[in-house]
Image 1 (tube, chains in turn orange, purple):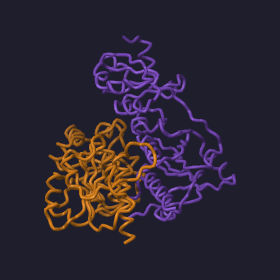
Image 2 (cartoon, chains in turn green, orange; image 1 turned 45 degrees about the vertical axis):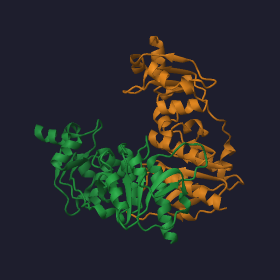
Image 3 (cartoon, chains in turn brown, red; image 1 turned 30 degrees about the horizontal axis):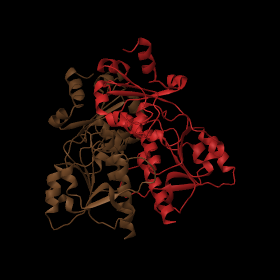
Image 4 (cartoon, one colour; image 1 turned 90 degrees about the vertical axis):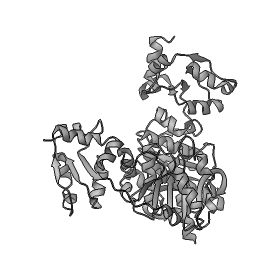
Amino acid sequence: MLTKAEFQRLRSLREKKHREALGLFVVESEKVVAELLAANFPFVEIYATPEWRRSVPAVAATKGFPVIIEVTPAEMARASHFPTPSTVLAVGRISRPEFTPNLLERGLTLALDGVQDAGNVGTLLRIADWYAFDRVVLSPDCADVFHQKVINASMGSFARVPVHTANLAELLAALAATQAATPIIGCDLEGENVHTLPSLRDAVVLIGSEGRGLSPALLAHVTRRVTIPRFGRAESLNAAVAAAIVCDNLRRAQQRG
Amino acid sequence: MLTKAEFQRLRSLREKKHREALGLFVVESEKVVAELLAANFPFVEIYATPEWRRSVPAVAATKGFPVIIEVTPAEMARASHFPTPSTVLAVGRISRPEFTPNLLERGLTLALDGVQDAGNVGTLLRIADWYAFDRVVLSPDCADVFHQKVINASMGSFARVPVHTANLAELLAALAATQAATPIIGCDLEGENVHTLPSLRDAVVLIGSEGRGLSPALLAHVTRRVTIPRFGRAESLNAAVAAAIVCDNLRRAQQRG
């Protein structure tokens, strides 16, 4: 039986300020919880209905599995962040990977500028994970990585790709001032064809918001404008779709040599 | 001043059965309405606040522009399908492109099997439009193309790409029985590399639902299993993202010859 204070604490994690204050976040998707448990993700608490408990004997045998607090479906409905509660609610500790300003010089970085749609941010994390990007950097006005909608759309990738939050304009200005000459790729309707990208070992792929694209402060730092060839009449592609096509072509060019 | 019956009619278009019965659908996104008007889309009615009317003098001069019924923001809130009403509500007539069973033999077809997320269906229509696919075929259990979330996510592409609804299993069985030998492409984790697809003039690209992938009845008809190379650890890609990568590689291979 959960106390009133416990319900309040779990529900408060809906909001970013409370997540930040407590250093905790919540996952309620059965699929994402199962995937993270299978990968030994160190959840600190798991609340589950008897139904969920019965369904995961294999996972529950994993070492380091946290104690499961059994709750009734009615209690779950009270603790849940959603109108339709799940059978499990897992609490994880927010951890921030170490950030150094020269991080962007090496490897592949996906940088998101003001992507506010949580589903899009999650999908972008999943793409970064699929293409083994070294990191994702979010501008402070992106959807919060520990928002449940981001976590769910990322299908667990939020826990596998290092995600940083930083002022992108400052970061790119600093990068431009180094000797690294790491290319900064931005999508544009009049850039080089993404199909003829050369092999790039290091690169930053900049993705703008759905509504207004890349902000002018960031556009000024783009050193390679790339275009995804269009054959029909759509005006643009969804941000995550465009990012995926750039990532696929980037990796393909690397393999070609 | 709208009558009670008029409010009821507009609000009823939220539901598919009423859209089908009246043969009408609604668009409330200012962006999508403006884009469709600029393309001379034949809306049958437009309800707008004075604010919207002032903002679109250029578009309003277009020939064939329907009569605008001016409503107050309070009336718009009552007619709107959303908690946050827009400044415009446009009503269009549902039209279904002609469908013949041998349609799939020629050109490029995107076929969606049980894609229930309206945002995903809209994004997929936008991708089909960008890559100039000849048509999209939805299985009957996909999200309805005239659902506002589909319309909005498609950014107007729903009006540019012919969209059909049909029993995909029957359609593919019929296609397999013809002499056309049109390849039927399905994504798989162990197929041929999408980067080495040959140039295909005609093809059907099958996309399954997020949760359960392609149904076995359809998988049996796939003649080319393609795989999107993975470099990292994500288990899968979002359905729309995977479709976009296949489309990009298909068009790229055609250009190469």
